[in-house]
Length: 603
Image (cartoon, rainbow, N blue to C red; front, side):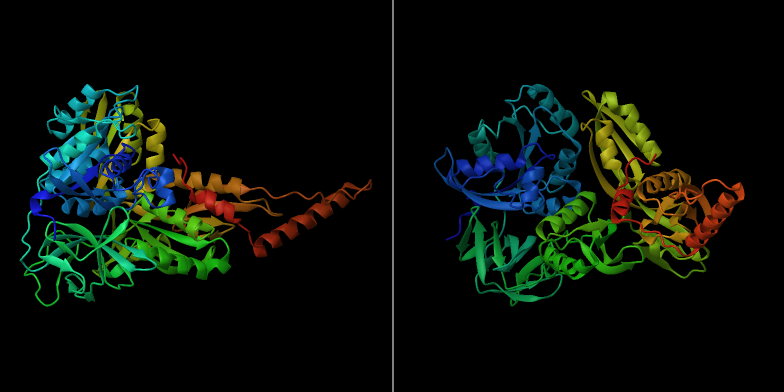
């Protein structure tokens, strides 16, 4: 028999990166007896090595706990541990839609940060009951009263009854559990209505196929039932109903208000879109749940194997990764300089970095990544329509282009007062438009509109280095705007290198081109002839560096005699070098590509 609705509590934990979400989840699991002392490990819900190493959550995880409250009744708690990073915001929004309340975890030493704010607003949009939890109160730098004031001033929710905890040492965990039962409302839902369930997440298991995390809104989901995905219209037979405690525990059914997992012999994660509505194939629900949208990649880059023989291995690895993460896309492409590879689309820079790191680690691949670029919209001349440009190398001829539009974002940055000046300069240099500047305690909150292509290169690294790691940054897209954009080509020995071409704003093109040429001059080894390295826009060269030739002393064998003997030899050498330069090919080593594409500070 399913648990009565008034004894179920579905909640998520929201916070900024590194404020203690996963540690708090660990303590709640331990306190309610979800795992024994021996089975516990740190960040038990983060099951990828990369999540544990970086201390970040990438996949939202869920766990069902049983808790006997002070009133003597046993409650069923479903905890959803959500990612904190902006790249995974859509996963957060679906996880929040599956809950009725949230624990807002704020670090007692660091206070409210940008990501905290973004997730709290999403939570408020879903009409959640928010329980503030101030964590890490045992740190010497903890300032509890200041953080309470920040929660009230910035977020606008009362914090006088905030729970004070230290997840690491176990302080205040009992109070958190009581608050979940008393302050978070139970779910609503009709068991007898037609089945309506939300697909919250999905991942691939080599033994079970695709595993789907669902929140049943109405009706009952049973083993052996035929279900329909309303977005794709596909039918599947449920062969397993279970929940995570955090180990898998099989159930016979999931009723309205419950969160659990199902498998239905599905082979491709791409068939299970996050946010889709699942219903009964024979007795479907009248309308789908609101809020479904396809996840769109924002940042694109090329991935090429260092060893051309690894191309097949890279393709297989991408297919396998795609099984676990349907939010990135890839298609084959070839480059004259780098050979065969794939053009991949990602949700953001962290997503790109994680996919790249997983390919390197889990599949043992050496990769070259081209400079990340965003999607541009090009209006063609003579009303020939609009095209989307993912790869700068595919840009049409200038004469065919009426205008180019680039994506813009609205960024909210929190920064301590002393770093404000240099941070404003960084945003201005990146063509930012300042919208707002307010003060909260000793920190400034700045709202800027910025072009996304100025952010994808190295903005985040520069932001962190300027503010010594204290600034926090959150953004969302606000649409496309027309810009004075040009394609900058890099030419080595008068040959364009397609992997290094990029789209830049005309105003910053010269500085970018000069930076790239200077960098390549240091990276490309010297040959027996001079090599010009140029940055060009169309036919106009905007920057040039020359790699000096290696000098071979051809006059060494001349002893005595007339000076014309030496001159003759030098002239002969000059002719040879000229010929060599015409026919000689310049070898650009892989390290040079990798270093040139790692955009450092380019002015």
